[in-house]
Amino acid sequence: MEDIKTIVGFLHRVPLFHSLKNRQLETLAKRFVERNYPAGKVIVTQGQGGEGFFVVASGKCQAVRERSDGEKVVVNTFEAGDFFGELALLDENGLRTATVSATEDTKCLVLTRWDFTAILKEDAEMGIDILQEMARRFRIALDVL
Image 1 (tube, one colour):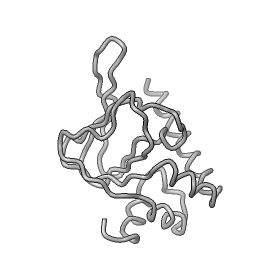
Image 2 (tube, rainbow, N blue to C red):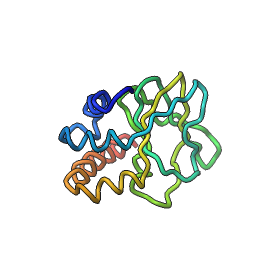
Image 3 (spheres, rainbow, N blue to C red):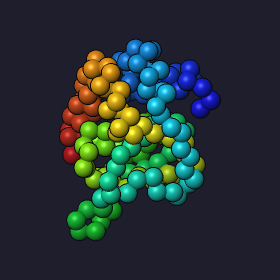
Image 4 (cartoon, rainbow, N blue to C red):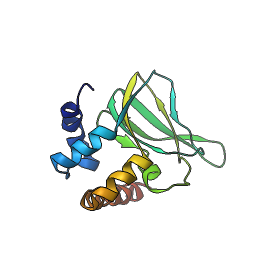
């Protein structure tokens, strides 16, 4: 994405950030880094440490979880505007809960935990808004299980 204004416009449409003010979105936009993944590329791996949060800017990905019996199950799919890795923003020592791979050429905006933490230290209101949306998302996920 070319400039901060474009990234802000995109982030505003991401459910996790829809309640944020423009100045807050600008702060976030300055911290995201763009990464490109070709189709078939693993973005994050189940069981490995995770320090990044991903927003799909374009393309598609899928999350696959390997169960204890070795069976692999697709647990989610992602396209533009969807996000994954939000637990990595909160849990310093947590491991990835699924492997996410690009199913077509994919562009992601990536935010590291340390950048997210630094932002929250400067703007507690933003943290509350984001955490409320995360809680809503976890409730929905639990209802599906």
